[in-house]
Length: 128
Image (cartoon, rainbow, N blue to C red; front, side, top):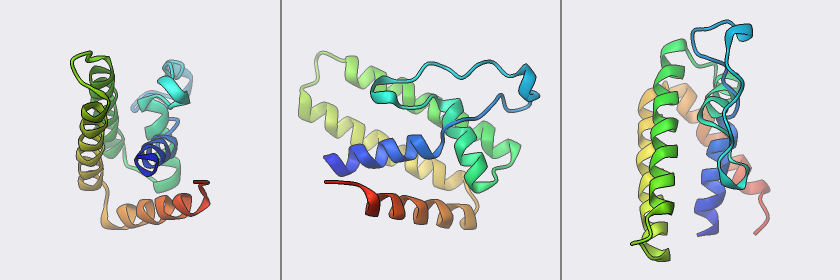
């Protein structure tokens, strides 16, 4: 499950750092609190992806919604005491796959290819 965790953390890191979508930088609220394990906030994730992929304002808004939903769902999964460890992992894997599909549908083919290459490079640099 380490590759899944690494992929989730990379996707989060990749998307780190968005100021408010339609506000000027000085009007933007400070970045939100980070999730456990130092995961960036949804806004931070979108900002990073914007920097790396050149996202449009519309794409930024759509991705922010995806990352906010993903964050809320992840918190719900991990706080659900009725799930055992394997069920939580399975639910997180499903959530990650669903989020990746949503992200891919928002990106242009060129952006999706660049993101895939960046993730591939990141996987090559990780320590197992």
